[in-house]
Length: 382
Image 1 (cartoon, rainbow, N blue to C red):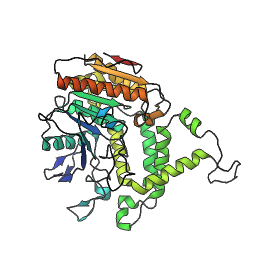
Image 2 (cartoon, helix red, strand yellow):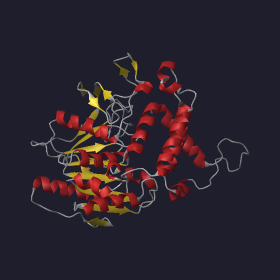
Image 3 (tube, rainbow, N blue to C red):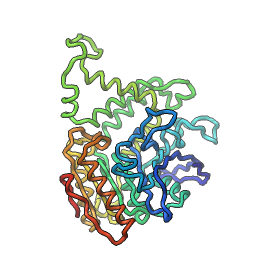
Image 4 (cartoon, rainbow, N blue to C red):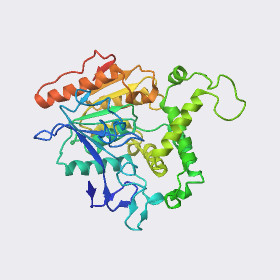
């Protein structure tokens, strides 16, 4: 969908016009009350679920979560996935032509924030005639967007589902992002962000950036179980090539990433992560910041996630409870680290599925009030 009306960005820059690529799943009901917006994380896209007829290997990044009979059941809900501005999967970003110059935006594409993405998503919702979402949902960076929706448009969502996320990055997280960006910025192939004109890609920088990021997505236990100190050849090579299986795995991930992701997009999205801090204008008081919310909330964290630790989710839960919001919180003991939000832990899927069952019951019987089941484990409702 193309938007000709300029978008004022948080930085003060103006995006004269832009296009958003989106996918939908399921059917919108007559009163348009069953719509759910799913917000994507760093390297994902609008392709949330299912496969394409001409590319059956291209499976949606949350296909285990979204679909007929799944936790977010598309037999009941109309699900929308949107590719964010600045991304490299179709929506307007650095790779696209800047009408003012006739050349790709490259380094001239303005820095965007989580709040800018939400403003653009709201315009898409307007165009689709959706006044209020049944829920806005996301994991990791997507969870930040869901939280931002509850603050910027408190009456436009009935439920906010925030998974493996945080109200702001720690200094350590910002440091990891900067190391990754420096790997890209110092790659000779970067050319100040205008590498498109040179017909090259800063692959080495992208590889290292992905390797650094991927380390933070896994837990120590998960890496130990998968790779340990296993050697590829069974013996030390006494050089600086690949000795250990974990080295092979990280380099494989880096190589794969450098083939499909855009370096300028990586810079933009990690900066958006760094800048997100809704409590900043309230002197760091998250309770005051979340006082604007009106939605009901589900928050889920994973005990081995050290990138966005459970402490950050508990911080959000406490701030919402302080504001007397209705909150359900699940802390899942899964071994997979931050990546657990993308995986098939049955307790996790049960929690999310039961929460959406409650939302569905509210749609079918608006006066009903059904608690989330505790069969999945440590689920607490406040």
